Image 1: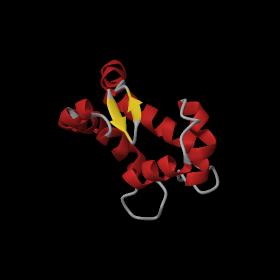
Image 2: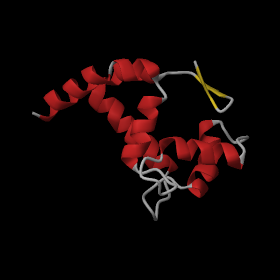
Image 3: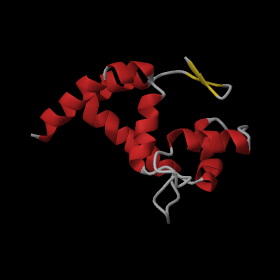
Image 4: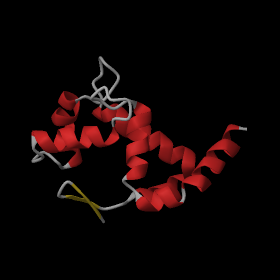
Length: 113
């Protein structure tokens, strides 16, 4: 389990990856992104994340915690998360996936060929 801003996350990603394979796991991450994103803007905004926190069981998060969560993954400084930033953040929050990311990359490349 990992703690992020006082919130404890259990790392289910390695088990999901093992079950779904790299391609299936990436599809699930993309589905998660679409679930949380603002449908008109195509990105996860403060408002879209705040609105969908109940889906994650995190409805009690403060506005400050939501902003911190967005800031953690916001690589381009626009205050929101695009799909790549979201997926990168999910990997960073999973220490086990970070260790196996090379394997994931190789598997994904092999599937593309």
